[in-house]
Amino acid sequence: MKKIPENTIKRLSLYYRYLHFLSRQGTGTISSRSLAQLLEANPSQIRKDLSYFGGFGKTGTGYNVSELKKQIARILGLEQGRRVAIVGMGNLGMALAAYKGFEVLGFSVVALFDDSSRKIGKKYRGKVCLDIKGLAKIVRREKIEMAILTVPAEAAQEVAAMVVASGVKAILNFAPVHLNVPRHVRVSNVDLATELKSLSFFVSGYDYPRKKG
Amino acid sequence: MKKIPENTIKRLSLYYRYLHFLSRQGTGTISSRSLAQLLEANPSQIRKDLSYFGGFGKTGTGYNVSELKKQIARILGLEQGRRVAIVGMGNLGMALAAYKGFEVLGFSVVALFDDSSRKIGKKYRGKVCLDIKGLAKIVRREKIEMAILTVPAEAAQEVAAMVVASGVKAILNFAPVHLNVPRHVRVSNVDLATELKSLSFFVSGYDYPRKKG
DNA sequence: TTTTGTGAACCTATTCACAGCG
DNA sequence: CGCTGTGAATAGGTTCACAAAA
Image (cartoon, rainbow over all chains, first blue to last red):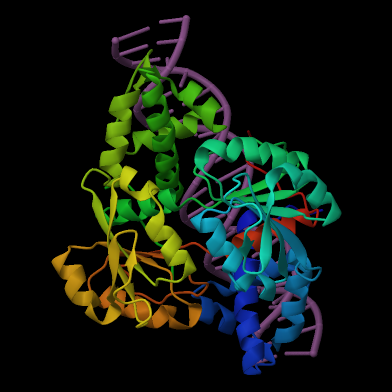
């Protein structure tokens, strides 16, 4: 199998967003050039990204919007309604539990976990928060594949180990620590502090280059 | 001035996190090799990253932890206590307003904004939510340099325009839309949907390569 | 013609490897 | 010695440019 750059995957996700929008607008067909214009991106990049997965376009015409959208959904595995758990019902966990954008994308938040008796048994957006001690059992029973980690930094590694042991394949980690996990588990870090610090650097006046656009 | 890769800045921010930790532990000195081990990274990369900003290390000894930490803080502009506004007091905005990690890093959340009369005047973690109509005035008076955008996707572009017009230099955008801003304004996007979709791709079994570790 | 898909060329980032310093 | 700082080499990702298809 050909090696796919990670950025390609991120961009597919972005294309998907625009295709969703275009298909609601009733646009039937779009060329890589027009799509690139919307995205402030390079047409070749779009074609190259898509070409990793096969030829979805028609020469001279472009891409069928709804078809391409469907293909990208398939590639990203969004068709099967991935089952997700949120671990850590602090402010952020609660906010994410309430976020309605997940279902639209084919993600179902099927369980919430915490270790505090103040949280366990409470309902958040109609879902009851469960004791993290039961994580492994629920993950197996509910066929949960992904976990969103919103626990304090101090607890993150320990909780990550539990999550991994329960059989989860991918973790979206909000704790500002590096998680040590086996190679077969994928971790994506969302680190607000890092993002803010990068922006701060920019504000300082170093004019580091932006992508051509 | 030499051109600095954007990834270098992200990594600097990561190094900072570990240096903070090491200095609390009382570690006085660290070599690029030891630091790299902690980070699961490459020693040359660390040295190269740092070398963009000057030679902070001592040949044969390594780097002085607290000195290097101070230098990175200076590079990232964390010394001056950057002033930040949060715009959009939905679930996520509220969670971020309550987040205590910002102050530690040298960021002060000095103002909260929303456009809804249900939110304006309410207090969140001791700070009153202000009418977004007054944004420009407050930004100038409070010397706000950065904004965290936590508004719905539909409103994001319009709000971003207001934020830019008010003189803010950098935006941390949580709305899943591409923001059109002038070149002198820096936008960082935190897109949960994109992150989840990328992870979903991985769960699908494509074993795309991870960084050497 | 228009536009895709793709090898080639280019550009950027990472890693190597070693001179030079302490 | 051990380790940094950095030019050189390598790897990786992006853009170009064009043949082939509609």
